[in-house]
Image (cartoon, rainbow, N blue to C red; front, side):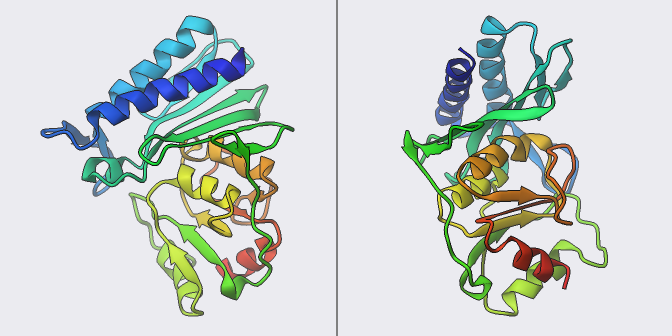
Length: 256
């Protein structure tokens, strides 16, 4: 039942963003940061997702990017990003998705990420592996970081620090390592899970950006931690996901 509702809710959000994609006069406003847009498609997708969840589980806790927390006395929490990659979406770039995770008693047990523009539906359930369009996926077995292809992202509110995002990315680029910036944390994680990327890291993401992708990477055989190598929590900002083999080398390079 829980899985079916998750799939239905994800598909409902995806139908909405397909409807709005590349439409003229798309209504766009801005949240915090220099350019952190929210579109009418974000709110419409969120509404469609809520309707599915509330129909079946009216007493479940919901945490969503646009509406924040809708607290309920429930051990279940739905963590929702109605459009991950909103800048891409607003620009007509089809690298964006709906991302939904289910948390039970503080543990992520299920996640779904759907990019309808590429017809790619990622899903994982704790202990049952990860899939792309129903087929099992696995992380890479690459062991040489110098030959890796990795991804990263940048926060909307950029803060300079001793090891800020530009400093850390320079450590990879200066060594000739291939670095990509796709603009969707959820898809970055899924592409690690599917073996398209060998690793992904970012200094600051939100729970709704990474919750579903986190379990998808884990169930595909990957490793996910914070940027200090500690056990990952979706409620702290830094994240590193890898094929497991490259994890320590990635941490060392980031903090070199």
